[in-house]
Amino acid sequence: MTTLETTLERCLRPLLFLAAALSLVVAAGIVFFLSTHPVSYQKIMSLTPAPAPEIDWEGERRILNAESVIGAIPYSGSDGLALVLPSQLYEATLLNGYGNCANKCRGMSYYLEQRSMRFQRVELLPVRDYLRGYGHVLIRAKHAVGSDVRVGMLDMLEGGYLAKDGAALDLDGLRAASPFTVSIVPLNARCDRQSDYYGTFLETVVFAVADSEAISRYFRWVEMIYVPIGNPKVERFFCNASAIVLGIFPPLHVSQADYERLIAPNMGVYLMAQSMTWATRILLVLLPVLAAMLAFLTYRRRARAARSRHTDDFPSFPAAK
Image (cartoon, rainbow, N blue to C red; front, side, top):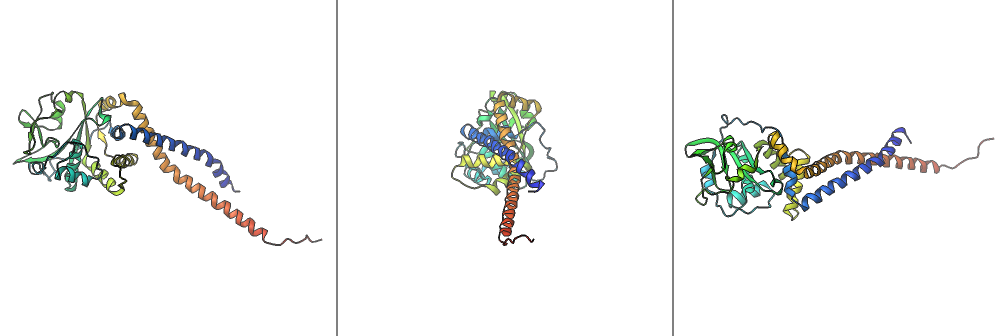
């Protein structure tokens, strides 16, 4: 046995033990998140204490005709949809009018992304309940209403744009707005000016921003790997989890102070999510290495066995006197 084989033999057992331990961590994480709130894994792992990428709105020539697009949506309900593919969400939300705020914003994101329009998805995350899927989602985009072109906030659930004192509201204005001072200007005949999200709810939230380029990369990933298995909850979890592990899931940009506010009350979930993520990443490197080691050692053993059989086939002769 060569020195290399001896070294590999000595390393193999602890590496197999490590792989087994990491697999248990991953399995425990999957069971935990699927049995509690699957959305909590993607929420807590997507939080990033860094500013969102700047968009050159002045140079952005592609403009959303908000009045036309939102005005054409046949608003039919606000229950959440368990669809995974972005194209399916677009059809269900913008073309058929179903879905909650997150669904409708994903549908609009797909519409904008297909037309190479820059935008941002803005999530209003209540500090206490965001890991349970509570909150609100808006679209920030350069859009036109009549002859007025501006960068502002679109509430896809309510079918309109946000305003304050009669003027369209952008993200900075929304961050600074006091409860009950924000209004909705409807762009759809089926929608009204009512919403529960601009009262005291504003006092409980952190504003998180995802960029359109990151969202586009995530859409391409989901379209590439998606396999229907008959359980949308599980399908969505594994699509999102794989994107997080590989660094493809869109980061939610928050300030450092807000990041700490969101993480501190949920440290157990955060540690579980981090452990599951890094265990999976290490396994993605370790398993091919183990496979290569096992293949090499198996080949060498078979080669030695073959040489041994070949030697045994020769007749033995008495030693010369």
